[in-house]
Length: 97
Image (cartoon, rainbow, N blue to C red; front, side, top):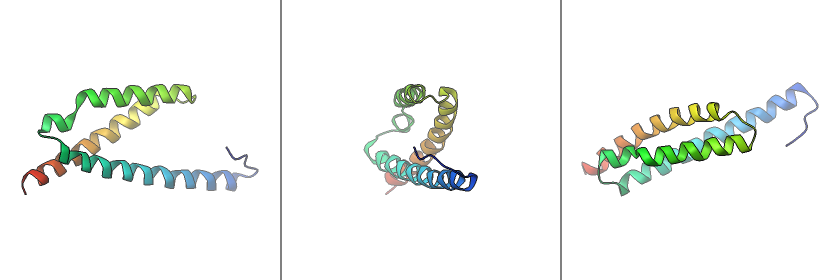
């Protein structure tokens, strides 16, 4: 972790991280779309057990990093909900071809 000496420097570092976070989320979403092609049903796309596993894993990681597990939980639930919708759309498009 870089030790910043000015407010501007700290904000610049946050801006870089925000860019990286959005880029990583976009990459995650692209993998989600690929996964849709390996599934056979909407129920499989929804993958409730997988979602529970992911949430559990990221909550544990948050705790180990000194972050609020509730914050990470909320972020991931929201992100996963949106990505499941994206995956369903991709699944339906693939099946209609």
